[in-house]
Amino acid sequence: MDLIWQIFLNGIFLGGLYALMALGLALVWGVLNIVNLAHGAFIMLGAYACYYLYTGGHIDPFLALPLAMLIIFALGYLIQRFVLNLIVRSAMFTTLLITFGIDVVLTYMAQIIFTADFKTINPPYAGSNFQLFGATVPYVQMFTFVVALAVTVGLSVFLRRARLGRAIRATAQNLTAARLYGVNPRTLYAITFALGAALAGGAGGLYGMVSQINPYIGAPLTAKSFAIAIIGGLDNPLGVIVGGLFLGLVESFTALYIGPTYTSVASFGILVLVLIIRPTGILGRTA
Amino acid sequence: MSEVLLGVDKLGAGYGDMAVLLDMSFEVRQGEIVSLVGSNGAGKTTLMRALSGLLPRKGSIRFAGSEISGMAAERIFSLGLVQVPEGRQLFGQMSVLDNLLMGAYLCRDKKEEKRRLERVFELFPILQERRSQRAGVFSGGEQQMIAIARALMAEPRLLMVDEMSLGLAPVIVDKLLDALVAIRDERGVTVLLVEQDVFSAFSIADRGYVLELGKIVREGNAEELVEDPEVRRAYLGI
Image (cartoon, one colour):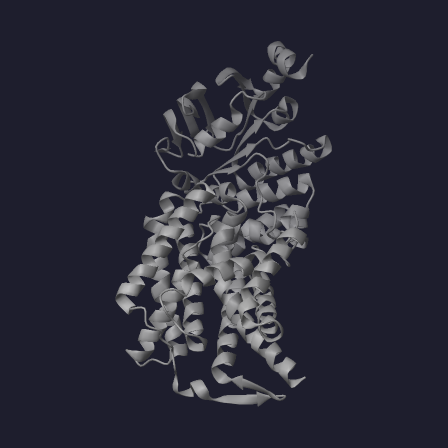
């Protein structure tokens, strides 16, 4: 029983991080209609940004997180403004190809700059934990979960309440009408894409605290984010929380009962099931 | 006579090599309600798009003293030329309030935004009651009302309404027409109504134009145009 409780908690903590990873991908997909294959590369870069701010700048990794997000935001803004805006609203194949290209470039630049060595973000409190009804909870894991959830809810509130958030939703729903009322799509797309990148960067920083970083972690995380975004649905940030938690739990229990090698089989198997049974996602609206 | 708010001279526009509007000239004066009628394919929507700056165009368009034929859509909009697009184009998944606030997107002043909202709610009290409901769940007439209210949130000088009556019951159209008259009378907004439904369009208009295959073929007082045998034959089938 204790074991199941422990695995459940592990799954929830992992799921919170997954939700944040997928959030940016879902946002960009929903608004720009681009499935950003470089999303994982932004996660990877965010992890390195956090790592170097901590090891080089001696900033606590959780405090370094906003800074890392800001750096990746700037990078995302530039990429959208000067590369992706050239092909915005073009065929899916074109956008896939370009973002794949960006992914390759970022990954190999990271390999040259950061080397392929594994790195981890190890704050002094990395080993400490506490007991929760018989389960062991590492502080880092819990903070990661809390921060991931807070950022996800924060984005949801921003999209609902803020003027810019409203414009982002409006553009996603009806570009023609949004333009009629003075929304400049180019700027808005750049901000949205940068926001998606920043969210990925933040997720990367957290990922670096609970796992290992190398230049190649991006691609599998893109795939996972893609699965979560589809499972959770694109039009509601709270959907990715459900999708993320769900996937986290599934992976944890699969690792225990079937074997760690089968976690990806389980998560992508569920993706296929969702696509067959409920193509709009768990919380997605049907038209 | 009051001054000319919108002056269109020899306007030409189209899609690629296909010209839809040829040498169109007309004007709308400050405080008028002008109706521009034409059947399907006459070029009404193309005209709206050309005036709003969404299409490449030739000739001259003067609005509120500026030449706008070379301006980008966003600039034209901020001068106060605002359209209620055909098919309403609401943000269907967003609340009424969010839809209205999008109309005031370029207004960054919270107080001013609130003032505009209050004025719009005065005109359409039902929208205040139902402001948190999704725009997509409203009836066609109510959606048209939301679309007009959203355009008013931009504080237009000229409100261009495209195919307002499309798909609506005559009794609903009458209510919306009354609302347009109120908007002109109480708020001094000039209205350009672009319509297929000749009878309702001319019922509230001061002056009218008849558009056929990209050209103005008739113009004059609304009452005279309704009586015009040629117009009656072509549009009313009498």
